[in-house]
Image 1 (tube, rainbow, N blue to C red):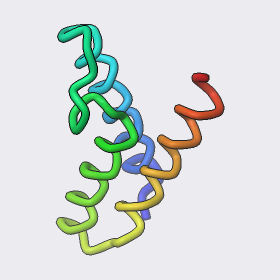
Image 2 (image 1 turned 180 degrees about the vertical axis):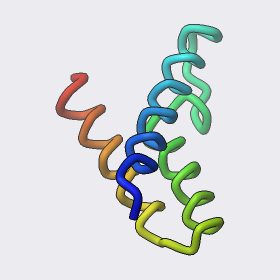
Image 3 (image 1 turned 90 degrees about the horizontal axis):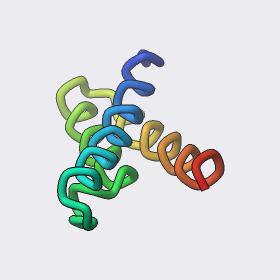
Image 4 (image 1 turned 90 degrees about the vertical axis):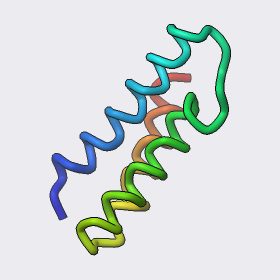
Length: 71
């Protein structure tokens, strides 16, 4: 499992969340939720690579970062 890819998925999902909130000003639920985006990007990555941990580890990392570090 590549640790850089896990951090990349989490960072990308948080950047997408911030970009949507700055652009549209209101939350668009499937796209502006950083935790949701990390799950979908991780699920896609896990299907492409065959490693199921890419679906859940970035999701948990993003959830921890958004709940405990940015609250």
